[in-house]
Length: 363
Ligand code: ASP
Image 1 (tube, helix red, strand yellow):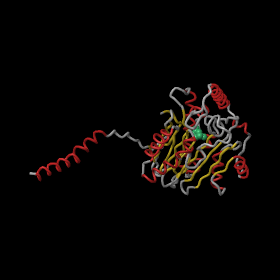
Image 2 (cartoon, protein in one colour):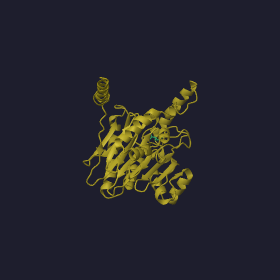
Image 3 (cartoon, protein in one colour):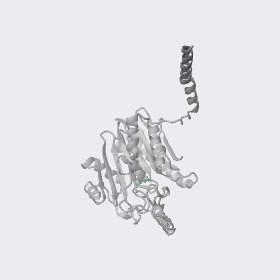
């Protein structure tokens, strides 16, 4: 009798464990959001993706003319980079070619069109990385280099260093025959007006006797609307090599000497053939603290995460929870691409699996 009772209890528990609990927990599982995997052309397998900055870009906030100007330029740039890859150029070449075009265009916050520092200067940062051998070059605090991405590449290829800043970097640029320009070259009226606007807002805030901000409190000068237009590119060439690069003027009203994530390898830029290439844009201080670009690569390396899932985890969970904002573009060695951002918009373009350029701006 006691045996039967014991047997019934055991059977009951087994039924509960194998039937009832799983059914119950299946019933409670939230449906996983579907991840659509973007893919580059596969034959030959070459891929190209760019961004022109993330920020508060709401539908309807751009005039039709301005939106067209961005779309046309992004199409031109992504096509130029892709063509370079089709012609057999390296992923580093494609990244440099594309970023130079954007640095030369005042639509973007890089090179001509860079935002102004609090003391009315343009201070430029850039970096590039080669996924083949993890070589990298970065420059920061430049005032006279027309195309910072080209100097970053020269630091990588022609110096024993990874990063050079300020006067020293510009001295090296001169030695390397890299084009230097007068500081006035970088002036644009719209960026100057943006600085004046931000300064006024800051004055108004100060008058209200606001407490001294910590990094968690956002001073006006660092609010998301005060920067966007940083540029970046990630490429996969037909030799199987990934490269990534990023270039920026930083954030409007930034303090003298402030360096953001863009020239910090592992924060704003990273490339490793074994995992992926990443270029970021957003509130640089957060990208540095979180090591955003390297973190995406590490999730792929250590947790075997697919590229879009890794990018989403870093942007939509880690960056979001930390209070930062921005986005990334990324590409793996199979030509799978990822786009992830938690801001209102991000200027971006890529070549789809049929070899066609796709341009997007809004969420
Ligand atoms: N990340 C850049 C910086 O903090 C700015 C941006 O991407 O808009 O310098």
